[in-house]
Length: 132
Image (cartoon, rainbow, N blue to C red; front, side, top):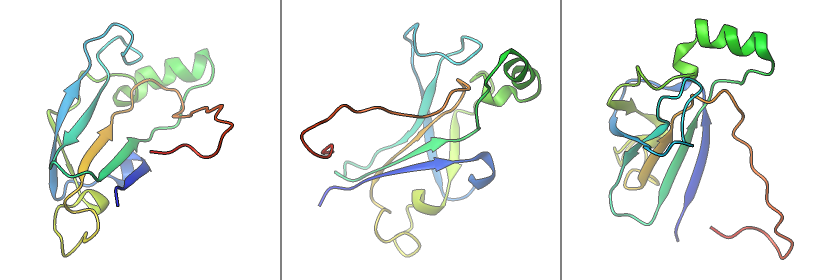
């Protein structure tokens, strides 16, 4: 059975633990952070058909004042310029089969957050639930 797990993470829930994930950055002009630096994600592949996908959290800005404050005081939420080349993750990202028996062997993705928007979605599917 293929599995897809989607997580929302906050900076406080990320630890320097078990799995090193490599940074992959986009080089398309529309896939950028608030400051124009390239958006990206961290990836660890195993060849499995299972995937664990995490979304970095960080709230959002909602007006000119909050967005300017964010850019000045929380640059890590508006830019990828200081993102490390690797991120260390634990918990459901752990590759230790004893600690994470169901998802230790899954492919893992952590989507970086630097756009100050909300991760939201819309589906106009009318013929039943979306199949992954």
